[in-house]
Length: 296
Ligand SMILES: [Fe+2]
Image (tube, rainbow, N blue to C red; front, side):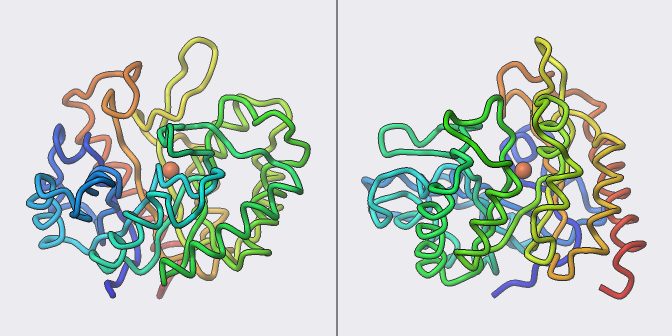
């Protein structure tokens, strides 16, 4: 099992294919986070890892410890759990790269359309029970701690009748699972939704279950603030990071997410300002880590 501790950069297609994952030798990076879905093979073939993607995965692993992150496993939809990509592809991938834990998004998903990005689960007491029971079963199959990432969402799922933080807290308490706290998602949801409070969210979720944190920047477009990962980390997110770090005793990792049009077609394009922006945000994250977690 690899050791994941400190500051990481998400090695998504924008970083790997456009900016260059090997341009951060002078940055304080302790590990890379890889998106499982960009490396796994289709369900109807015999490979777990796509042979075409294997060389780049091996190159990343040669230079850094790797942490797995899941987007589209379909684990919280209504298909039988053992038929989902989460069990058939993500679990063996996590074992293959020896990731010590793995996080997923709290998105709905199905076999017909697993790509339901930013489609949140229904925040309700009934869904706490259903989702938690599937999460506990998935964590058993993974064999490593399962973290749930708080989702950025454009609108709550119909029928939601409890706050997002109460939903997350209920799931991890019942399932015995953990949290990936995406502070930019918290900031964006607070910015976009009258009924959502970042302060209340952070006061409601159990911070002692937070193992990983995501930080990122975003973009205003059409009257909405989008979680595009395409701008410097906002000051409000840095403030939340400094608030949470001393209060999350199980925290192991802070990961910077940077993506461009590969993540969303309406995102601003990658240009020469992005590399210094990323290096600056990594350095600031490392500085806050050193200040708030001395000796960690
Ligand atoms: Fe995230």
